[in-house]
Structure formats: structure tokens, C-alpha cells
Image (cartoon, rainbow, N blue to C red; front, side, top):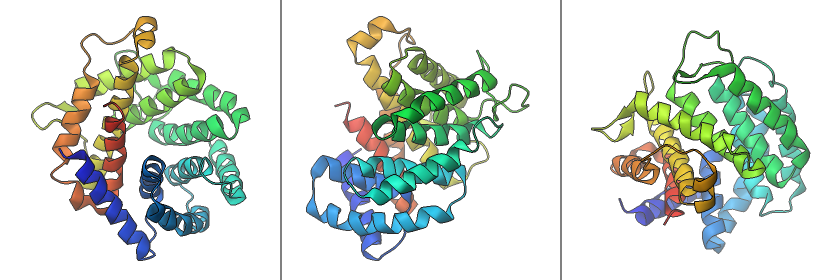
Length: 291
């Protein structure tokens, strides 16, 4: 795996699409924002400014939880680099829309995506939002999680379907974000437990990827990239002595190695996924941060 070559290719691919005035979506823009944050390149800034203006027009037409969560996550990252008040207004509207669904029985995957975005926004721009988001997170965990049985598909123990990889990866990521804000050790410990469940039930040792049942190739690729990112975040915690001393961790866990195996497995195909390759670039960024 040549991580830097892949990041350069993805950066060029997203940049070329923006030069053609294409709508590239929130994930690709998050990737490019993070590249700009790392490099400070003027050419990326010139691409991002009009792209964010288009994003401020596009987000209003997306009425899905995942879509709104993606835009809110983008605006949370962009607002840390820009003083444009339109970002604040858009984010507040998205938070209101996402909060409207709290307390219901939506899929854990959707709930996790919306909460993760709300927590990211609250961390840097709206701390008053954090307590309510944490309460909703704990409600979902209490409703959907059973020890040794993983997560239900929806936020209810009465759901017949359990153990979907997408729910475990999504909620694991949200729990890690919650820990970054609150320092409450049960959150990363549960995140690790959920990923251990995923490794027991969905890991394909021969292919070095998570098996995704009933999913198309693009969705499987994106979900494995997300899983690699979560594993990198867990690995970063395990590398912290204070965390190891305070938390109960899985013995023998090698999260960085597993993440690297996933990323190596995707290295031969990420270019086939077009703009969806931005998910791979984001995961590579998490992996590089470990080194």
C-alpha cells in the first residue's frame, strides 16, 4: 500500500470533479478539507471556497438522516476554518432536523450517523447540544444493545434482526466521538466491544475485509473504509498509556494491523470507486496519524 500515492490520486480526482463544477457530496469535501488542513495548499483553498458555496445550496434538498448527517459533519469541519455565518445557519437548521427524529425507533445506523454529526458540531460550536445528544446516545445503547448478542437493527430490543456490521461500525464511531468530548471511559470500552463482535461475526480472514451481507460493491467498500477508520481510532487509544491503565481493553487486540490489512485489501480497487474513494482517503488519514 502506497498511502501517499493513493491520497494524491484521490485529491486529484476530487479536485478535477470540482473544477468541472460537479457536485461531489459531503464525504469528498470532508476529505479535501482535511487535506487542506494538513497541507495548507492554496490550490485546495481555491477549490473548496466555491464548493462549499454549492454545498450550502445542496444540503436543503437532502431529507435523509444520512444525508443531513453528512452535511452537518462537513459544516462542522468547515466552520473551524471559516468565519462564514452561512455555515452556522446551515448547521443549526440541520441540527434541528436531526433532533426531530430523536426518541424514535429508527435504524441504529441512521441514529448513530446523526448523533455523530451532532456531537462533532457540539464539540466545537454548540456545547449546549452535547448533553442532549449524549442522553440520546445512551437511550439507543440501552434499547439496542445486548451483551454477547450485539446490536439490534433498530433502537429496540424487540427487533428480530441483530448483528449488522453497519450498525456496529456506525455506533462504535459515535461512541468514540462521545468519549473525545466527555472522557467517559464506558464509551470507548463499548466501542471496542462492538468492534470485537464485528470481528467475530463478519471478518473474512482470507480476504482481510469485513463481509457485508446483501450490499453492493460500493457500499461494501465504503463500510470497510469506515471500519478501518474506527479501528485506527481504537488503536490510537491503545497507544496511550493513561488509557490502557484506566480502561478494560481486549487482550491481544491489534487494531492498527487489522486496519492496515483492510486498507491493503482495498488498495487495488479504490480507483474503481470514483468519488467514493474519498472514504478510503479519510481512512488512510486516520492510519497515517498513527505513524
